[in-house]
Length: 259
Image (cartoon, rainbow, N blue to C red; front, side, top):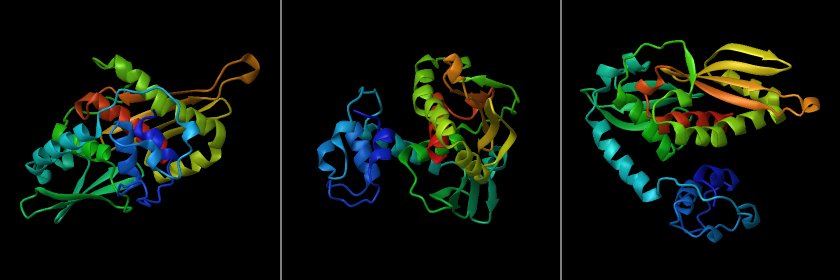
């Protein structure tokens, strides 16, 4: 069975409700957690769904974690931490750049969060909410090192390296293989720096969050030499001060999805 992100990509995203649930996102989360029958979607090509079952957090666990996180987040004064994290506070609103979008957080009179939404109007995925709230709750204060390292450089990351490769690095490599010019055009919607483009590859730094830049290195490979294309995502050495490993991996996954 696919992960919920893989499944969501294959759904029509029309939120037709014929499966018995309110949205395609909810269907993907429940199916990947083993809590809903995949055959209930009338639009899903069942023959494409064979695959390895991956150990992922269940939907109920995800919601429980989100509920607990929201309670902690509500008690955080964003006026006190926003500037340190690259967010701007404008009257009763905190604005945080996030990939190619901005997150708008409504604040009460004292600076505590009331609601969180996307500037572009997209419905936040529960994992987006977890990532964004963790970013504020971590309240990292370690300066960016400008030294980019692989995920494997962080403690206890071994199990996450394979996940990063499967859900971010390999999809990014395929994107550059198949839609190079379109992806370069899409990058204009992101805050990037040090973009280098050549026949042999592409490299750039993207500010996925103001204090969590990612460096993406893509090599085009050499078919004549039997060398496949390859992509590597690197993180600022300070990244672990701003997000946990799960969120760092998901941030790279989200980048691949957005592109």
